[in-house]
Figure 1 (cartoon, rainbow, N blue to C red):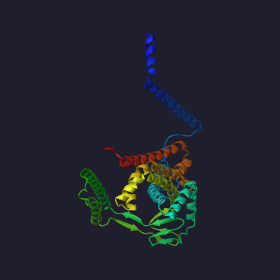
Figure 2: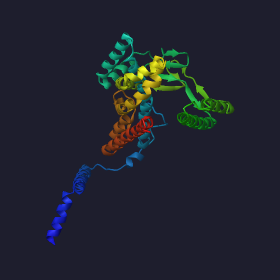
Figure 3: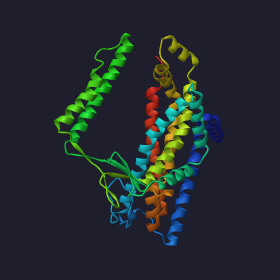
Figure 4: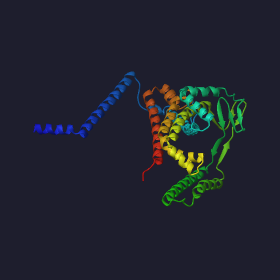
Length: 391
């Protein structure tokens, strides 16, 4: 009986599948024990120091002001409100920076392959200089340039509709009226119609080998329906134009100088890396594709937009996703220029006031993790949508 049992155990151990599962179970058990030890030791040390743990502090009044906020905030609001302010300000940097960096990188990457000697050298100089200087120093550089702008009294007027000074860039504020939700709904519906028509025409053309009819239905729906909704609701928005006073600019929406400096630093830095990604993607397309496009009579611009870039996108998207993530995470450098992102106001001021370092840092880390995973999921979906599919 013992011999039979030993033989069975030996047979299972020689099975690579079961042996692999056993090792995985042992590793998982070791990791769980390690995490348990870390958490238990941390709680014990915190209790010994008299430091309370938990998230009750989120309901306590913050008691400090924040210089810039997308949502309403007063010093009497809670630390949870501070967290929301920090998250919204961080997301604003990412939302403004990612499209701008992509556009700059795309343009500079194409210019890097231009046939003009001067243009190529200028693009290469920009890329090599910017990529080899730390992004924090570049942010400091742009902030120092912002400090050279005139005072509020001597603000630079941009068509009497916007004012620029060392304190902020003040732009007209778009204010929506109650009927705006109708326009927004019509825009969504018209977009669905246009996308659906475009997909139907693409499938019909692939099936029949000829251009599908109703080519203007999608664009007309995308343009005409929102315009009809706008005029039917009486143009449901107004503009609040800024006015220059003696000591301040009133009205409009103010973009603080810290946001301008941070945005310029991140966009110009990340755009240089994206430019190299774009250049590599374009060069990955074989020369025969260009020759075939030329044989069909396509111009240089048509070849680039219709032949080269659609194929290069499949190479460009994955590394560009990494650059989007880098820009989002590098926005945490905002604390060095005084922009109130989540690191500055929540992992900074709130942490100093409450002393809940473990909880606050954990929440901040989870926020960046969630944002990074969301960007990755979106870009991976787009990458699959543009991938070549075998027939």
